[in-house]
Image 1 (tube, rainbow, N blue to C red):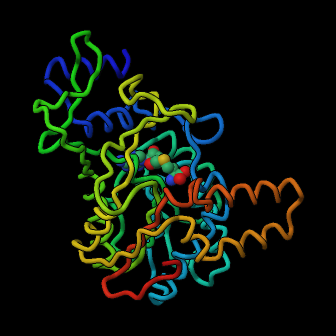
Image 2: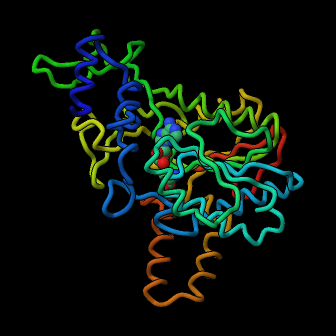
Length: 340
Ligand code: SAH
């Protein structure tokens, strides 16, 4: 049995499925889902993320969160990451915040991760880095304390729906029995729009938590502001674009994140949002160049090369600097935080 056969079976029985259902099954099917079976990151995987490129990323994000924690009076709190991948971002954030007096003692660490394979990987990578780390498949079971959260390349993995005009674009079987997108029934030239109810829901929960208990959060992802960008659904396999409908479960499927939609969801739930701002600008404004110089000062020549090329990838406009954006969530009425 393959995931493709399962999906076709389901369409034969029940009719066309939404893109959201398709993404959900491709990424998270308990047996065949993309994230459920593998570690997709790095050169030998399908894609590489900012924390895997440079330690500076996780260090600065960790310090940013700790600064918000200090400003809010150093409360007992939870430090949360959504979709931690290999655990690299949290490891870098914990290492960088070790020197922040009282921070590690005040927080317990909570990782929201759907994949048992990646939970295992995170457990190994984070062993000994904090005395209290626990895993949750979703946000539901988090303690009612101020929340300081990070989410890097998490929201792009959440299911989206697409509409052509008012008609939902779905996935069906064509006359040869292959997976195909439903053609629009009217012949108009309406643009494609996207929405991600799952992203909205999760952002509402995070923002409501901040509104009730305090805290701060930061979301980093590839995405856009200023309204619809048309069809942004994409699949990636071995660092190349892949047909979304080919080999379901074997390629990563994502969509660009609509940052304005996330910001309004946060505001509607009673929190304040700042950004979205480009990743390059944000990192420079919270001290990435200084951190690079400090690291280079005690590095060997090959290490220096690696540090500098990683920095360049994160910040350069034509690399990740502009496409990736940063959104901060804080309690309503908060002053503009560092970096924005
Ligand atoms: N933040 C990491 C990994 C990004 S990949 C990094 O920057 O390297 C997306 C991560 O989100 C993976 O860990 C994946 O298993 C997890 N994930 C995807 N959908 C999820 C969901 N609905 N609930 C919980 N975790 C999810």
